[in-house]
Length: 68
Image (cartoon, rainbow, N blue to C red; front, side, top):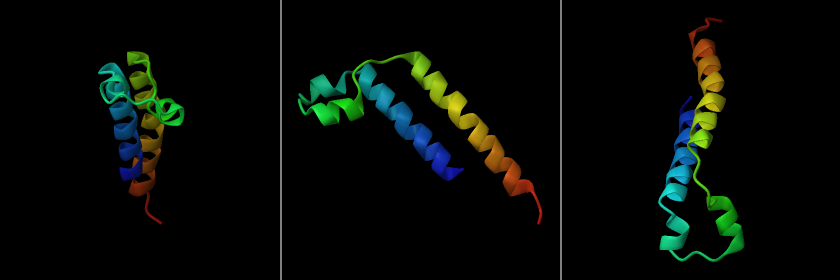
């Protein structure tokens, strides 16, 4: 579950950097880096990240509660 939360945190941080146009502020021109960072903020992306990670968190929580 920690890994899932880490992935979610990184995804949201990336989206926040797009909102504040971090690539322009840092004057990043490397095309590969720009592709990784992204350049268009969309709140729907954050919602999609949360909805995508939620089943993983629920499954992991369910698995940790099972006794073997």
